Image (cartoon, rainbow, N blue to C red; front, side, top):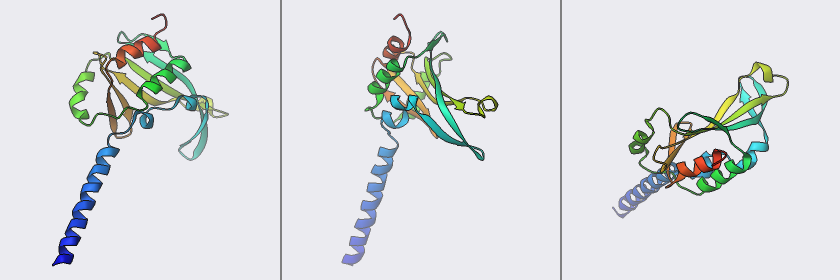
Length: 167
């Protein structure tokens, strides 16, 4: 009887630990969903169909709420990365999606261009999309499997300050 009780305790403990681990994994840190600034100067190898291709970061773009385009300087992107890198994503993300239903939310995009002899035949790839809520309190990062949401008071206003020249 004691062995069965111990076995049940071990199973319950394993389930609880697994649940905690899954909860932590669903709340990634900013640095795990946003590319580090030093990656912007690297040449990457990504597989595309049967062919290994080299890719280079071609541009970082910011579109403000009025959909005006702004090229982002590397130092401005690095400052944004530092701001979000240590932040944990918000657990109740589904409840936050409504903050991004506006048609024109400020958006940060990172794009890769193909390098080498196949570059003319291959389209650029968007590798990062970050959207900022209209009230400036939230941002979300698109990743495989959905979005990671971050509550950072003032993040939208800081993005405007960093990414829009002359501000």
